[in-house]
Amino acid sequence: MVITHERRAELLRTLRLLESLPERPRVIVTDNGSRDGTAEAVRRAFPGVLLLEPGRNLGAVGRNLAVCEVRTPYVAFCDDDTWWEPGSLRRAADVLDAHPGLATVTARIVVEPAGTEDPVVPELRDSPLTGPDWLPGPALGSFLAGATVLRADAFRRAGGFHPGLWLGGEEELLATDMQRQGWWLSYLEDLTVHHAASVLRDSTGRRVLGLRNTLWFTWLRRPLRPALGRTLQLLATVPWDLPSARAVGHALAGLPWVLRQRDPVPPELERRLMTLQRARRGSTARDYVG
Image (cartoon, rainbow, N blue to C red; front, side, top):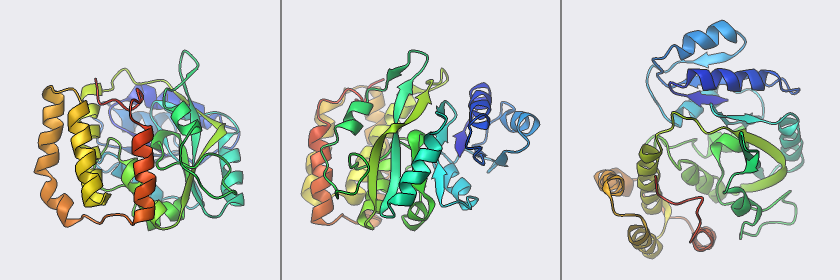
């Protein structure tokens, strides 16, 4: 399934590529309030696509709407500027069939047109987390929505994407809640997603949302001392400029609802979060810059 917002040309390219996959997946598109003729173009060019039109930009919650329409055990997420390589969806389904405790498999991401690996891939491949021997690849603490196949029941039981986060690093909260319920997440080297980064991407806006959501996740799920430490570490390392100030301002404005919904994870899961936090220090793939 794909969420989109005012990227008609890129979405149509992605749908053409998905339509050509040998797996012939059923494609669901949530058009998040586009005003550029996206919905009309999809209806005209791809009548077999299930098109959802909530009438406004729901961000990641648009994926929740799509999962409500899924009748298969698994759902492959895709962005309007990413697409799956032929054979990867079949391989993902086979792996999930074989491992009933596995909630997600995340693919290797190839950046187009250069054909190079995304900088985040080495972090996935060399994940510091440990897991059971049956895992098909490295254990992960989160996933990338545009490059992951999920078990639909695990997604639903964990509540899907939280509407408060809207978009930008929204996967971390859902991934943590799935792990809390006993599910495992894994990277799988022989799955591939291609990513041609949208020229319409607002990198500064996404940076603001990403930092805000990281702060909100920290206070929603981390115990008190780690939450304080993580907050101080973020404030000490992000560039102090207008986007960072906006992100912190938005985070403070949302603190009342965050504290009302605060539910810290148990010690075992907090140890995993701390392990990831240490491993990501110095990561260029996750800098709050732009």
